[in-house]
Image (cartoon, rainbow, N blue to C red; front, side, top):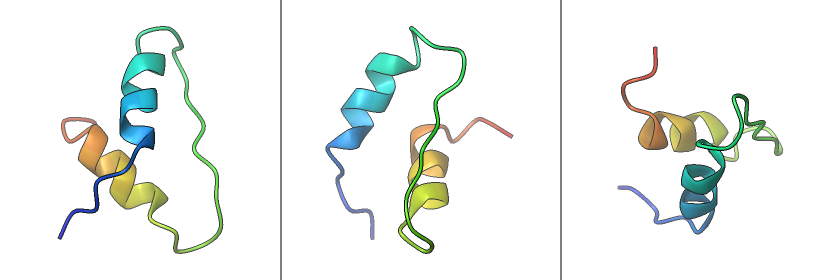
Length: 43
């Protein structure tokens, strides 16, 4: 189950402007899952 996040559109806007984007938050809040969803081709 994927939860639709409002931050996805912000990440997509920033990825073209900045070479690095930091995603911070508490432990087990879904940061890695979010980034794997937004950037599935990144290894």
